[in-house]
Every structure is written in C-alpha cells, then in structure tokens.
Amino acid sequence: MIENFKTSLKETTISVIPICILVTITSILLGIDYNTIISFIISSFLLILGITTFTFGSNISMMIIGEKIGNKIIKNKNISLILISVLIIGFTITIVEPDLKILATQLTNIPDIVLISTVGLGVGLFLMLATIKILFKLNLKTIIIINYIIIFTACIFLPNEFIPIAFDSSGVTTGLISVPFILTLGIGLTSSRTDKDTKSDTFGLIGLCSIGPIITVLLLGLLYDGNQTYDTNIFTNNLPLINQYINNFIKSIQDVLIPMIPIVLVFIIFKLVSKNSFTKKETKKIILGLIITLLGLAIFLVSVNVSFMKTGYLIGEKFTELNNESLTILFGIIIGFLIILVEPAVKILNEQIEEITNGSISKNIMQISLSVGGSIAVILSLLRLFYNISILYILLFGYLLVIILSFLTPKVFTAIAFDSGGSATGSLTTTFLLPFIIGICTALEKNIFTDAFGLIAIMGMTPLITIQILGIIFQFKTKQKIYKNIDETIIDYDWRKSI
Image (cartoon, rainbow, N blue to C red; front, top):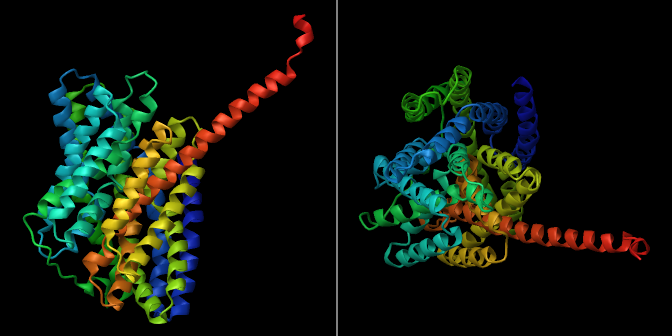
C-alpha cells in the first residue's frame, strides 16, 4: 500500500509541477500581486498531496464498494429492484459532488437545493437507462443519438442564458466521487457476462449519466427565467493567508463530511442486506479508505478554493489588458493540456481502462488524447468569447462530428470516449479554467452566462472527438499489423517441405 502511495505521489507531482511553473511565471509577468502568487505555490503543493491521498483512498474504498454493489445487484433477478437501487445510488453520489455545489452557488435565481436535486435526478434516471442497456444489450450509439436529438430540439424553446448552464451541469456531475463509483459499478454489472460485447458495455455509464442532467436542467429552465446576475466578489478574499487556509480547511471538511454520509450509508445498508459480501479485512480496508478519501478531498478543495479560482480569474483579466488574443489563446492551449493531466477522475478512469483492456489501450496514450481535447476546448471557448459565436453552433457541430465518428471507430472506443468526456470536466476545470474565462469575459464587459459558461460543456465534448479518432488510428494499426504478420508468414513458409 505504501509503495502504491509513493508511486501515485510521484506521478501526481510530475503532472502538477508544469502547471505550477507556468502559472507562477505567467502571474509574475502579468504583474499579479505576490500574495496571490505565494498562495498559488502553497496551494499547488497541497493539490499534489490532496490528489494523491484522494486517489489512494478511492482505490481501496469506493472502487471496491462500486464493483461489489454492481456485482450483487446484477445477480438479483428482480429488475424493478435493480433499477430502483441504481436510481438511488445515482442520485446519492451526484448530490455529494463538490463541483456541482460550486456551480450551484454561482447561480442567483435558482435555489442550490433545487438545481442539485434536479441534476441528481437526471444522473439517477440515466444510470437506470445505462443499467437497462447492459441488461438488454441495447446499442449505446442509438441511445446517445436519440437523446441528443431531444436535447437540441429542447434548446429551441429555452432562453439563451439557460442553455450553457444545462450543458455545464452535465460536466460537473461526473467528478471526484461519482467517476470511481459509477465506473466500478459498470464493471460489477457486466461481471456475469461473457459475450463479445462485455468489455465495451463495461464503459459508457459515465457518458450516459452526463446526458441525464442536461435534459432535467433544460426542463427546469421552463420554470425559471434566464435573467441571472453574477457576483465576481467570490474571487476576492482579503483575510490573512493563514486564516484563509484554516477557514477553508474547516469548511472543506464539513463540505466533504456531510456528502460522504450517504455513501457510507449505502455501504452499511448493502453490507447488512447482502451478508458475506465483504470480508472483515475488506471492511477494515474500505473504512480506512473512506477516511483517507475524505481527507484527500478536503485538502484538494482547500488548494483550489483558496487560490486557484482567484488566480485563474486575475490571469484572465490581465491577459485582456494586453489586448493580444493570440497570446491569450496560446496560454489557453498550454493550460488546457496541462490541467487534464492533473484531474484525479481522469487518472482513475485511465488506470481502469488500461487494466480492463489488459494494456492494449495504455493510460499514457489516453492521457495525451484527453489533454489534446482539453486544449481544443479552451481554444473554442476563447474564440466564441472573442468573436461572439453561439455555443449552440459549437455543440451542434461538435456532437454531429461525434456521431459521425461513432460509425467509424470500434464500439469500445465510443463507450470509452463518452466516459472520458465526463471525467475530463473536473474540479480544476471548474475552479481555474472557468474563472480564467470569466475574468476575460468580465474585462470585455460581456454576458458571463452566455459567453463564459459553456466552457465545461465544450470541455466534456472535445474528448469524445479525440478519443474516437484515437480509436480509428488504433483500428487501422491493428489491421496493418495483422496484414504484416500474414505477409511474413507467407514469406517465411518453406514451400519445398510440402512438395
């Protein structure tokens, strides 16, 4: 266990250091105050510790719980009970997502509890749909096409201000807590199957769960008007630095402890109902893992809340003062690439993909493909901000391309792509990239809700394109290798022995 922690610490440090260096140098060159820069450096080290601790704890707790529950549920022949169980699980793990809470607090005329519950319902319903897909071996591609036709049709009847919020709510649902749980739930649900589609059906749950909140929040938009106000004071804090860290740590522990209670209750209820599902050793390991996960998540949230939001916002403002769009886009390309390297949910997903595919899809090539998607997302977000491009055009064209690619790439890559899109939109996107775009938007005196919001939605879409392109390349190289082996067999065969 200690060796695993050390390995994770090393990998996370290597991922975070480039961001720390880039943002620190950029902040100095842009003339940002030194207190903010020092705070960012301290927060970067806390980020490393938080991500490492969270990932380690998650691997020995939530990953095991998710797989065991999925395995047990699928053995139950009562379909109604299975669907009710996954609905409750989907709702429970969503309402505890820290990223969702961050988004909810930024909306003025929708009560936090209303938005969070609506999003949770969307995830729960579509986790049910994902389970039905696995049970009855439905086609993922068909389900996705039908639902996105519904989504884009619904957008016609809603205020422009509400559309980016609906798509962004999709991205923040699949984060630090839900990704490992849903991913391993999928592994458990397909554990009893041995058909050729088992591996591809293991993936896709996160992707489907990302669609649900878009539909439910769009429906919510029929009840609320699009008039929103945004308070940029959330990016300023004049307390002494040490007080900021202490106050945020206490608040983060509270914010994480309360949401973790439903997950603990799910574990306890499942353990009581299904006896002998967990050995004493596994139970102790899971309890320890949940405590470590809670601590890691709290440290992670402190690091991003104290400094990352403020630094991202200030850098966005300062870049606008330079009046150099090309330089801003260049920074966006680099930071978009690097941030995906650090996202904890992405790390967990990539490790699971490498393990399930027996190394045929390596976590490194997945990481590069996702990071390229991150860069493209920031470019598109900045271009639509500078040149007043409607987010609907970007999303409509993007998802049309996604659907076309789904007919050209192997089935498993389409499922992995949709899971990757959900995982890429994590806490760093919410607490650094979004404030960065908001900072530019504020300086340009544009509408934050129509011109800045939507970044998370684009960030969740571009990996669908890059991963499916990776699938096409993978398929081409595999075929090429087969043909090469056949040719070598013909050349090496000694025909004289058969005469």
